Image 1 (cartoon, rainbow, N blue to C red):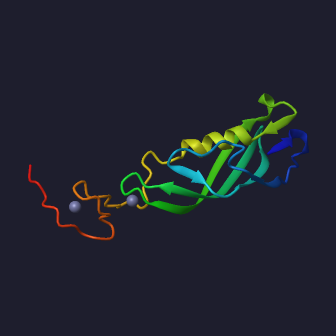
Image 2 (image 1 turned 45 degrees about the vertical axis):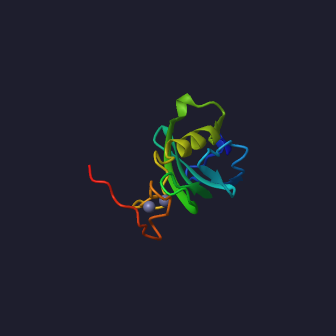
Image 3 (image 1 turned 90 degrees about the vertical axis):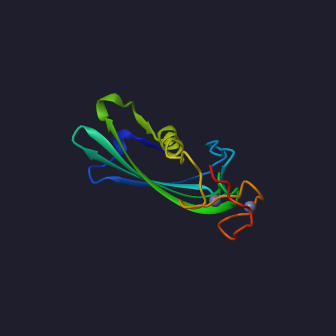
Length: 139
Ligand SMILES: [Zn+2]
Ligand SMILES: [Zn+2]
């Protein structure tokens, strides 16, 4: 997503683009992107700054770190960027800033759901779906 700074009109400019997750090298071992990353940027002038309101929509498959299930997730993220016009050249190139922001918001712990019960360390059963007969050790 690249825009000529002097082409941004006072009333703003809306641009959309589909970026392949592969070209941005987004996959990690527990997060796989299965769809393009749909990027919508709204450029506008606010005082001496360019404000870029960004919305990113994508679809990814995560591997839960507790129960090891693969789960599809639709993700919508919104970011606002401000750039002082005096610091910009002729063009404003958004790709790297957006990519970094998506990576920053990757969850620290990838979970299929916040209360995932995980796998029983004794028998390996998925405790979200079934109970097992393992005796709980008291400590
Ligand atoms: Zn899980
Ligand atoms: Zn068990």
